[in-house]
Image 1 (cartoon, rainbow, N blue to C red):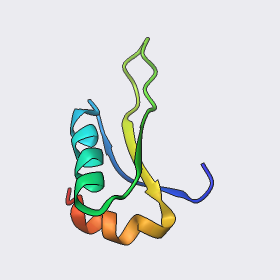
Image 2: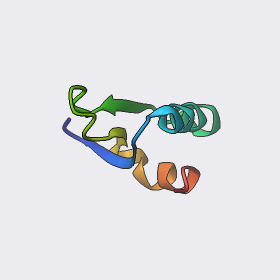
Image 3: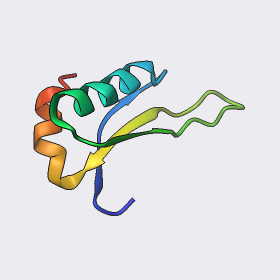
Image 4: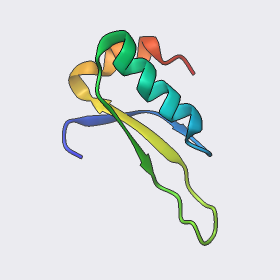
Length: 64
């Protein structure tokens, strides 16, 4: 994912979906939530990505 940066990760992903909606509602920042889990073993995390141009503003809105 060229020009995209990970700003958060989670075990469930539900909170990241809420953060994604917050980013759009507050600042019209597009975000993507990716499931990086290996389902057979429940290993890995969900990850929230934003475009590199929006990273600073997104990090101020999504405080972890």
